[in-house]
Figure 1 (cartoon, rainbow, N blue to C red):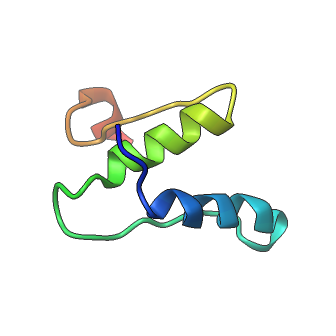
Figure 2: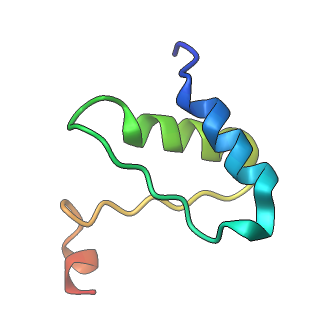
Length: 62
């Protein structure tokens, strides 16, 4: 996978630590938002949970 510019923004978010509690990623459909977030998470954190509310019937109930 090629290096995306957004990964630098994710790094800045992580460094800012307590200043930002949540990371919101917005953008057009199918431009790599999910792939970028998962790539960042897997390379920076030991545990990663991915829940797709559109495809997971149990998650839809939440």
